[in-house]
Image (cartoon, rainbow, N blue to C red):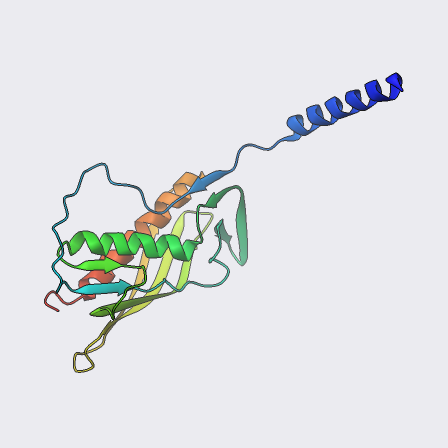
Length: 196
């Protein structure tokens, strides 16, 4: 009885040692957005403040996950050691919303549900967002700004954005994708009428 207990303990210790020796490096999690170091004072919103609702960004299915991927020709290569902290469509929506909100401090810009109908709704559709193994990035998108008032015009636009940068690390890939998303946010923001 004593021998089998000792043997069982030795087997368990050996298994633990083998598992720790085979352990992979810790998983790294990335976001597109980074918190600002500056404290921004936002004015109090009036009860008549314009509300702009940013709908969840639509992206191709193969990208809408937590996987960080690079394109290698026809092959999509998933990073074995890094992930987005949330689905890419949610991260992009959050970053675009925050960038537009920074430009409109007197208006309520949100990607969260509202209790009433928004003055404007913005829908962004991305048909391509690829970063290849050579560091070339391409983002193709179209968007619409839909007013609540049917008598006001619907605004539509599109963009083809390109950039290049290092993809030596997953951090580099995240930085390049953040840069592209910020460019898109600036383009979308230019489509929002100044006096709603």
